[in-house]
Image (cartoon, rainbow, N blue to C red; front, side):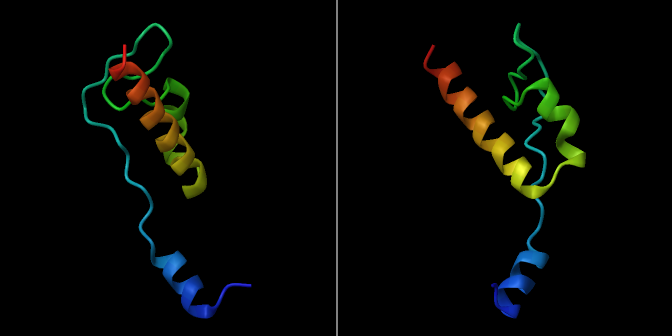
Length: 70
């Protein structure tokens, strides 16, 4: 069980802001070459919880790394 202090910290934590860099260009797999989120992740961003957003960001970082190694 979380302490009251930990619950307070969690509730005041700012949600992740969108990683959008306003350089939208989708590749053939519907991945944005600006932020490396999938089109579906971009569509869902405003309606998902913080944990899901964190997953999207991890996925995007991985895609960016793969893209840079090509």
